[in-house]
Image (cartoon, rainbow, N blue to C red; front, top):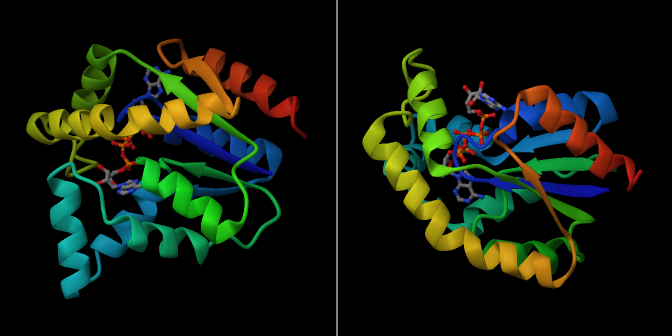
Length: 182
Ligand code: AP5
């Protein structure tokens, strides 16, 4: 089973994927976390990735695909934060040989996402949780992600879930969607 979980910055992808992966014993691949690990390397490539992430832009698709492909070693997996552009969706199918079983989209208003990330930014956990970078991440999301959503909608793979609700309510809805598959 291959499940993609997408949505804007702060829509709750990471929070939900952690719980879902534990419940269903899926391998959880968070692209943001994998890329932060790469960005922390004291190499030229690490610095380049860090610069891109701090600008709220996307790391080049070829690198992201290679990183992901190297980690696909379980039978079932949840991929959080991928694909973020149409090219990634198509490259995945080319490399892995098939599309995902479903794509869960967490729908959240811009205001909610900004408030959540500013709040998290106060704890200093994430260097990209400051206002300028949050706005750029949102801009990247809105400009590049729409075609991805239409693409999966056309294939009837999209499952929209309202990401504004409390965490437990969203989790219950995600479980309902996954239960229909496994
Ligand atoms: P990534 O780490 O994926 O960041 P993001 O997409 O900006 O999303 P976040 O991790 O900030 O939020 P989330 O939706 O996971 O929400 P979370 O559960 O954390 O990516 C970082 C960067 O890496 C990108 O900007 C890009 O540069 C690069 N990158 C990543 N993927 C890439 C790709 N495929 N291609 C190229 N580049 C890529 O929750 C956020 C906060 O809200 C938390 O504090 C949480 O406690 C709170 N919260 C969650 N749910 C709720 C709720 N229901 N109610 C109230 N609060 C909630």
